[in-house]
Length: 326
Image 1 (cartoon, helix red, strand yellow):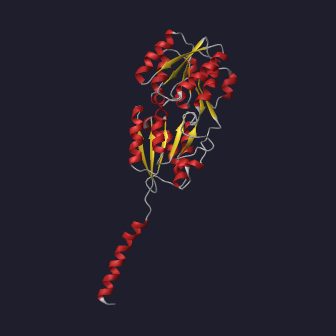
Image 2 (spheres, rainbow, N blue to C red; image 1 turned 120 degrees about the vertical axis):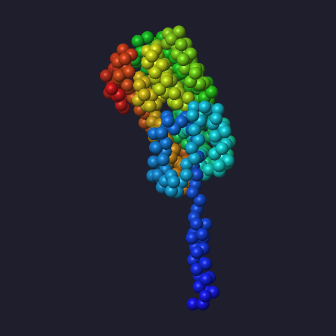
Image 3 (spheres, rainbow, N blue to C red; image 1 turned 60 degrees about the vertical axis):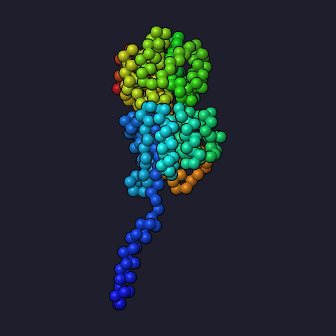
């Protein structure tokens, strides 16, 4: 072999790895946006990752996840969403972000968005319908407002005095007002009145409980909100300190010492959201993915807390519970 041909052959061989690397597809980036924190949501992140893995996307191998946590400071959500858009991620997942759903709509104009919400996406104005969302947005909703009357019914069956109950809401949440109206309508059916307690930050929790005690409410319904989920231990502690029977929307509260919880599984919601993100990464359009609703609801009772409050849980309710925490 001539020397010139040999050098050409070696040079071409050396270029092969460069050509191969150039032909490798870029690793897609998933934006994960949340109004809560990793501390409160580590189990939800695990469910989301597992769903991506089951869809064939393993973080660090063929997908990257960019996390943006508002840490309960919900006014940070628009900036965090804009940052992910600028990062040019392939798809954005957004949880606990209903307060700034309008900013998410802006993001969804150019990037597929999977929304995990407690609100009604149609009522919030982000989709045309649940079955045919249209546009660039889909997701999983637990439509929490529809469950508030059921929570009131469960709580009322435990209360020693039932003339009035309180509901704790974040007035900045778009779902708060319509949900409160539904609860008030349900309360009238029980011959009760509803005292609305507002909390925009954790500093409002103490004054809210003072109002509750001053108006002698028999119990408390805590609405679904990222702020309350971030500070669930603080709320559970206040309810125990003041002896207030309280019902929550997620099992994490009962696990932290809350009396009772009733609602859809947030873990399942994040798992299904991860499946949707995987399908979008494979080429499915968000408009072709109907917004899902839960088919199963969990009732969790903390029997230890009930004893501390001097409450007797009816055997029929215990039999219905998905889990009883001793």
